[in-house]
Length: 165
Image 1: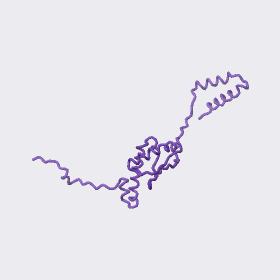
Image 2: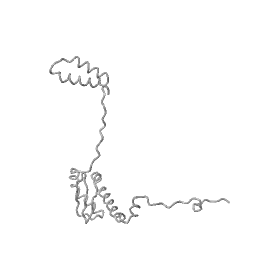
Image 3: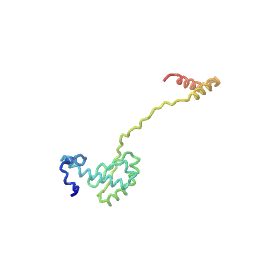
Image 4: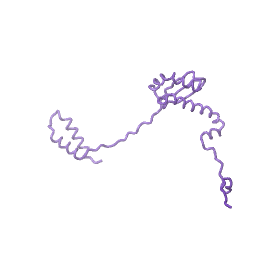
C-alpha cells in the first residue's frame, strides 16, 4: 500500500506565528498611531489621484493637508507653482470626478534643501611633449611688453610642472 502525501500530516515541523513587522501593523498596534492610519491612507490616495491627473508636474509636489474641502499642496519652487496654478481648474475637476470634495486648492512653496552635487576635483596633467613645446615657445618668444603676460604665464606653468607633487 503506497502512502500519499498530505500537508496536514506534518507533525514534526511547527511554524511560529507571524509577528507584526510591517509599518501598517506597527501603526495598528499603537492606539495613538492607529488613529492616524485613516488620515494617512486618505492622504496617500489623494496624492496618487493628483499624480494621475498631472503626472509630469506632480512628481515633485506633495499633499500637505486636506480639510473641509480645501486642498493644500506643497510645491518646491515658484516656477512650478506658476505652471501648476494654470492647471488647478483641471485638477479640481478631475478630483471631483474621482469623488473628492475639493472646493479650493491652495499652493504653498516650500523650498527643500537640495543635496549639493559633490564636485570631483581632478588634477589635469599635461603630457611631457606639451610641456616641452611650451618650454620651447617660452624660450623663442620675443621679450617685448606685448608678450610679457604670456611669458609670465608660461614660466609659471613650467615652474609648477617642475615642482614635486
